[in-house]
Amino acid sequence: MFRINSLRLFGFENEQFLYEFDSGLNYFKGKNSSGKTEFYSFIDFMFGSSEDIREKPWYIDSLKKATMIFEMDEIEYRITRTDIPEVNYLHYADEDEGEEYSISLREYREKLNSIFTSDNDVLKEIRNFTDEKLTYRTFTMFNFLGEKRQGSIHDFFDKCSKLRYSIKLTPILNFIFNKNIARIFELQQELNDLLVEVKNLETASAKYDFIVSQINNNLQKLGLNTWYDGNNSDQIKRQINELKNMQLIKKNKKEKSISDLEVMYNNITEQIKIYENGIQDSKRFEKDNKNRKYLLEKLNEIVVENNTYEYLVTPLRSLITELDTTISFSKYVINDHTIKELKNQRELLKTEMKRNDSRFRLYTLEEKEKAIVLIENYLTSDIRSVEPELNEKRKRIREIREALKVLQSSDDTQKINELSQYITNLYFSAKDISSVVEDDMKQDGFKIQYIKRGNILQPMVTSTQMDENDFEKTKSVQYYIGSMARHTLIQLCGYLGFLNMLIKEAKYPLIPILVIDHISKPFDQSNCQAIGKVIATAYESIGKDNLQIFIFDDEDYETLGIKPDYSGNLVTGNKTGFNPFYFASNTETEEKNEEAKKDDKN
Image 1 (cartoon, helix red, strand yellow):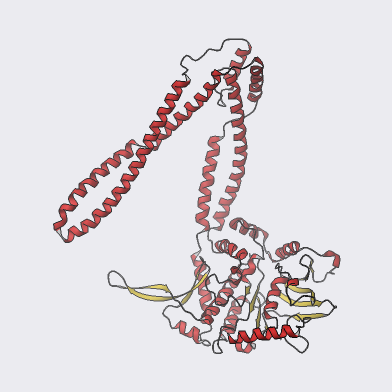
Image 2 (cartoon, one colour):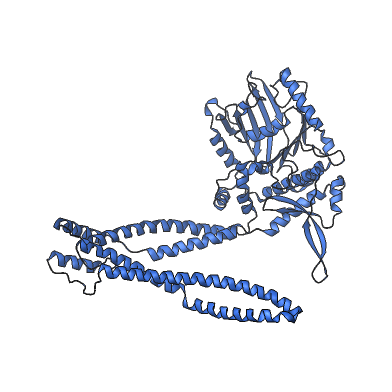
């Protein structure tokens, strides 16, 4: 259960004004320049928007603070925001509000987030899935339908015109409509564990590489023929002891000179180039052959109709057969394994050439003594090569990431179709009231299909077409209609459809409200009552205790076909608009009247 009970405004002269609300639909009427849009925005402000009211003429030197009391799951809370953004208060309704216990806007939002988050584990799952730090503030995109973007059925949520909301909509929709959540979380947990393991292995690998390189560098200073590979510690120690005992180290008679190694290195490099060029040529021939085959297919079609051109096709067939044989032979001769072996040999030669550099340098006795000490010290380290294990885990990480991409983008079509059907049913509920809806129902197979990509509410109709065998075939096609009133009513149904779905799932950090500003504007007198009918139908499935709606408009609620649970007028004998402490100067009043006249003309 959720309900905003009241909103109390405080002026700088200690004056107060109280707005009271009820469960269900709350309707406020106000003429132009009476603060309807300000009231609409102020509800968002009370729930933590970053708006600075000191910058708005409506509140300068008139509104000091505002206190809202709301009830969530049978617990009453009192929240207060002041004209200073970083001075805020949040308490249980029966607690005293001390001036010294103010909190920053960040703390204010964190506390509200804990109130509207029904399950912290689910919120963690959403954040892990979307890789975004989502809060209840992100989900306010489902709560506000303003005047400026009414009639939008593409990217239809009003707040998504702002970048900070639009970039988070797609990952949220991916989570809402994903049918592989359990499998995704399993893979994400495995991925997190693997990332930790890889980090540890990379540290061990870096240590291993450092020690191996240090030992080998120092072995060359001693003129030893051995190359440390991590597994021959005993052999290294034995040769060091022989050296310390002044025993002669036997030289390898088969050891090649640096010039021999360079010749071998260059020869292998040339072989690799030849193989790689051959592969590129083979690929190019194969591509050309595919084009020739395509041409042959087209020529065959001509020959079937007229045998006169057979002489053109026969040579081409022979050429393609010959090329097929050539390419197949090339694929057999040139393979990746051959190139891989050659590259391995080249790396070994490169290492051998590096080792031979030390043969042409002279080292002092002190440098050799130091080399022996360092080698003996490094050999005591407990190291091993983790490269195979590291490569295996990196491969698994790539596989998991690819699998996650596929799983995260797969949609639950049944859930999307159920949402589409609910939105369509809401729209059709106004068929006896609105000629717009009645006309649409006459279209064959009319429905409103929700399309996740682009967040679109797409009207569809059934179209009958003839297939290639001259049989009738029916399919749904997009139906384009230009009425602003029709689009706005569809948009309202979309908002109510999402709120119905999210509230029933009861796992998202959602404020269960819908705030609407001046929705009657695009409607004529005959279709305006469709608004009330759609809302009443939505309440039948949602329940008034689960969703509170606020509408600010300049028409009487009867005109919209609405039966509000609470109604009020923003302009009374005691106040000129939403902010009761604000009184416009004559100049401001004249400017607002001029703006109102322009709006009426438009």
